[in-house]
Image (cartoon, rainbow, N blue to C red; front, side, top):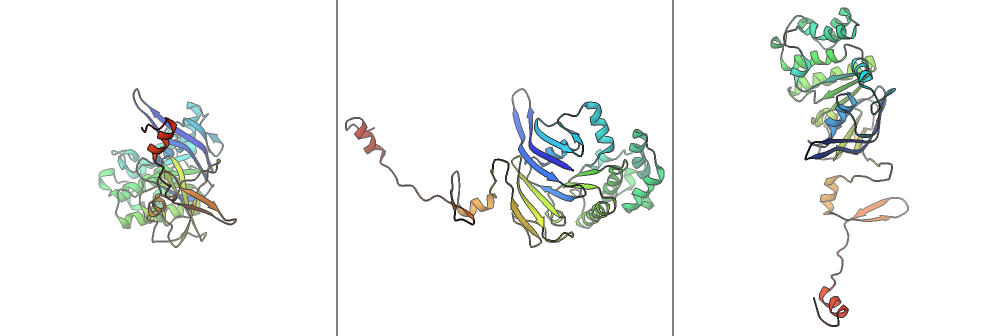
Length: 307
């Protein structure tokens, strides 16, 4: 469904150039429910904006289905955003029109695309547990209810890909669990591919695969040991929990990002030694190098005058 190969995104201004993505590689299968995690500034939201057609890549390759987002025209981009991808913002004000009812909010994108289907709009709100809130406006809904309306809106035009940017960032843990259950159901029953960007590690632990991004590159993956959705313990400290196995991701040149926690534990900074014993590769802190007397060496070089 999604292929990113050497994806680069550079933001430029008159005085500053920021490389948000520097050669990111990732593949996401059709029908997958997965999460992307990373610290602030790691590039995860930039990736989501590119996949959502909200931002243009600078270089590399990024394909969603049959769409090449590096070469897509402005006209094609409108078509892509209307029919291929749905987007859920963390900020509910960006998802909803305040003076419309919940049902009217879901119907609006259908009208704009020329595929008005009031029965399907009601069905979507029923799927997210809001059949009793069809005619309520924004101020009459709780934060969690507004986010569920946003999920229904994102599916209004039957997209193949659903992108969610911190969908549980502004709700309590009970509502967060409800939202995740909705994602699981939609993924299973509709077959829609769902990509979630989150800081909520407990949510990340309940999907089949988690991709960690660091410094604009894919650094590691956590893949569920069971094909069924798993885990309530989440992922913490950069290590997989009992339900997930951790993998370090190699790029095409064979480069990898060693988790920072490992480097700190071994007190590795700048350089490391690497050994191969025929079965495994071992990375170690370098042994202390012998100190050379700079004065003695210089004294021989200039006829006994030390520097």
